[in-house]
Image (cartoon, rainbow, N blue to C red; front, top):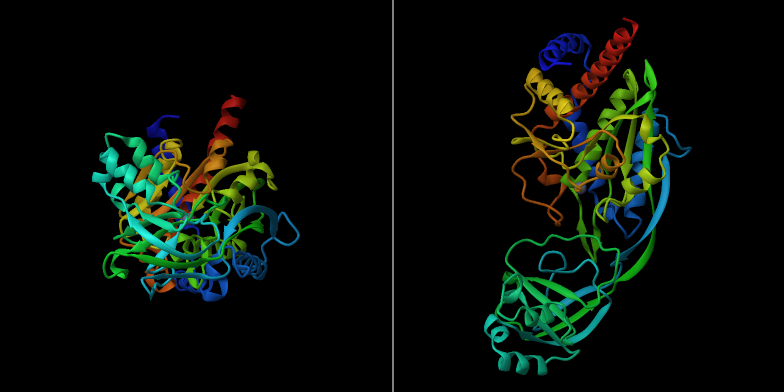
Length: 442
Ligand SMILES: [Zn+2]
């Protein structure tokens, strides 16, 4: 079909789409705010790996599906699976020269940090030492299991003898571990494996002068973590065997000792929009069926979505289109569509819908990326997009990505865009299908 023809079809479609009463409830943004506040509350412990954080979040999502009378491919909305992950359920204490530092704010450890306890001497390495053989050898002789090396000044630099820098950064020189002092904010992550030695990150403004000694107690264990994806569906009016799939991950980083990583933008916001869509679509079903999947284990390496693609409950070949929502709390600078270059026709439709509704200031195309839960579906041949909103927001994988911080400035517009795009896609697919059938008849 030519582009001209398609444009004509678009406008015809749009007349019909906009004549439909839009299943938008005026309270969308307020509802999303409530969901985000709930999921980011202390009770959910950062939806991770201590205090049943992700399990509680999964229950809340399943309960919301049940209240809105959605069906599910499973009896209890859950798809269970497990993986090993490093957890920090106990002590996370660090004292530098007698002064207590605050976990998550003043210091953090690498997500794979092994159990570490004791008092250690702090030594500094600099570029001149790396570049001078004698100085380097003298430095290495001072090291033992009771020393931590501050290695900030050599990280990411190139030296004539790169091996010496590498020996320090991989700690083959026999220290206890490494310290990086940082001026920018910490970002944390999830690790499936235990590191060979501890790496500590300390905020520069948390220390008065050069550090001499540290007292540390970090309790960490590799835990066999049991978790679950949460699934619900609404049966399609015309083609129940074709599915639109709306996904969002509900897990976040959990806790580091008392420090909670709330994950408001990442990704309580995506879950909020997914639940919002689910309750409205349950009241007004679409022509295709809609499957909603809240994934676990995204931050641990897309584990929930990978598990689903290997153990599909609604088969992948019934999925007409998948839309993954992750980071949906802003929007002043528009929306980015990952996979736009993979599916150019659908991307054009998305832009068209956005222009028709004057929703977001900009729709930014991006190529393939393995940066969220759409990825394994794309690889398995499902037509999929990952949408994220862009705008002023400075918190990512840190303790300040809180419910209070998100504005949801373009939430309603983004919601309508996703809803309208879904409908337009279905109508276009049906029209295309009928068209090819007619062609066959002739
Ligand atoms: Zn995310």
